[in-house]
Every structure is written in structure tokens, then in C-alpha cells.
Image 1 (cartoon, one colour):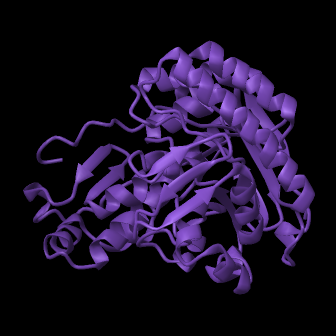
Image 2 (cartoon, rainbow, N blue to C red; image 1 turned 180 degrees about the vertical axis):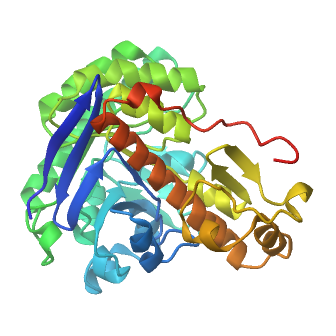
Image 3 (spheres, one colour; image 1 turned 120 degrees about the vertical axis):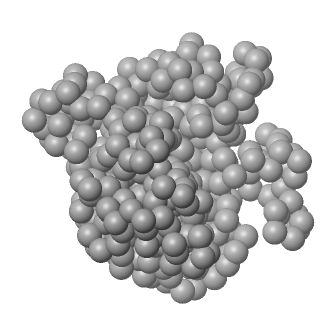
Length: 380
């Protein structure tokens, strides 16, 4: 099945669409759980399928270091290696290398870095990052970019943007020359390489980056360099400044964002794909998303609370377990506690995206409000 994107409904700038991949149809707008090391922490693949996950994200940097791209390739590619039959997107590793500020050196050719695992020396370039993703066999792969830090002055942001544009051209050139070099279907000319827009927190630079990335030509476009410490208002400003300069008929991916409120605001602006570690990371810390706001399950007030985490949630955790029981597991540090809370959070995010899509189709998006972000009051 070749890669394509179709828009089924529009409401203002918001879109409800279908992303066609070799591993199935992905209804957009969509949230991608993060499976950095070929696993979504605490949530097994069969559970992810049951929850309705249509696409998830894995990371090239981490898989490159462990178990190694060649090892995954020998075992039949990422889908077979992790026993995941649905779509996968791989991040090129640019953001992870960016986070190694004391262990990396950026040059025109690429990034020399030391592994955060053992200090060993490595090098990623547009060519090697693209080669790794072709070998992993993900349905959607990303051009190698430099993630601009925050804050960055105009001169620094522009230099980073120009480097990312040059790397985008090299990523595309390598991809066109080498796609289909491994035997599984996604790599047989059917992988989709997305370009990434950078430019720091400067709307005019973002506009220029978007226009020039579109000139290079990709089947989809991502907005990168956000969720790096900037205030929410700056994120919204950059998204609003960028989207009008991306093609209407191509999928748009906002990388690393965010809370339920962030997702709603970004869909209203015209974004189609999202990823974020919040559902599982917060689940492991005992923080739970509900329709009434976020709660900390270890709070004393839940000790004798027989209500589910969220009375409006139909996930397996809420159908079976009480807050009191889940709190007890968490206080005991039982390994099942973070698993159950992560499962609920992932389900909550997926259900939230389905509500947003339905609201677009029904013309009711303006009436939809995100769950409050403040904690529930005592006794709730």
C-alpha cells in the first residue's frame, strides 16, 4: 500500500484526514505514543493494539546505540523486531543529539558525539541517519536536522536554520538514491521522508524555513525545535506563523507537543500528527490525566476512594480498578502501578484525539474544551 494523505473534513484550519501507510490507515489528527527503544515503556504491544494505537514513534539515536541498526535489520526490521503490525515513525535522532550538549560537536558534515551509555564516540550525518532509518524500515522517517536551542538569538537561529536546510537536501538526496535497499515492504520505495522546519522563536525565520523546505519537496512536513523550554505562548506563535506556509495537501507534524490543551490548540491551527512522552512518563511518576484534570494518585485523599481514575473513561484500568487500589500499588512501588497508570494515560490521549476528530467532522470544535490542567481539589 503506497503512502498518501487525504483530508476528509475541514473546520476552519482544522482537518480530519487519513494517512495511508504500508502498515495501515492512520486517522488524523493522531497522537503517537513514544516507543523510544522499540517499546512504549510499561505498555505491551498487544495492549497498545487493544487501546487503538494506529502509529507509534521510535528513535533512531537510541536504536543506533542499542541494540544497533544492523542487529534490527538482521532480525527483519523494526516492525518484526518489536512485533508491531501497524505504522511506525522514526525520529532521525537530531533532537536526542541536541540534548547531549556536553557530548557533541556540530559541523557541516554532521554531529560527532559520545554515547550517553558508555562514552564511546559516534558520528551521525544526514546520510547515516537516513541510511539507519531506511534499514530500520519505519513507514515515516525524518530528515536529519539541528534542533535549535532556546533561547537563541536571531543570528544563531538563522545559522541553525540554514544548516538544517542543507542537511534536508542531503537527506532527501540520499533517500532517493538508496530507498528500497532492504527487503521488507516499507523500504521498497514506500517509506515517506518528512522534512523539518526550524528557525528558533523568530516567526520570519520559521516562514522562510517552511517555504524553502517545501521547495526541496517532501511528502510531509514537521515543525521541530519546540518543547525545548519556551513558554506556551511562544509555541503557539511559532505554530501559527509556520502552518500557512506548509502545503494544505500534505500532513503536518508538530514534534514533541504536548498536553491535552496543546493538542487541541494545535489541531485548531491545522496540525495533523503529534508525539509526546507525557502520558507514559507522567504515568510512571503517578500523575494521571482525567476529564476533570490531572491528579497525583499517591495523594492521601485517594486512600479510601473506590471511584475509578476517571468516571468518564472506558479504558480497562478504569473499568476494573479503584483509585484506592491503584494508590496502594503505587505506594507499595509495585511494578504494575506505573504500567496501569501509563495504560490509562495512553488511552486518555487516544480518546481525546478521537473526540477532537469527531468534533471536526460534526462542526463542533469550537465547543470543545480541554480538561483543566490544575490538580483536582482535595476530596475530589
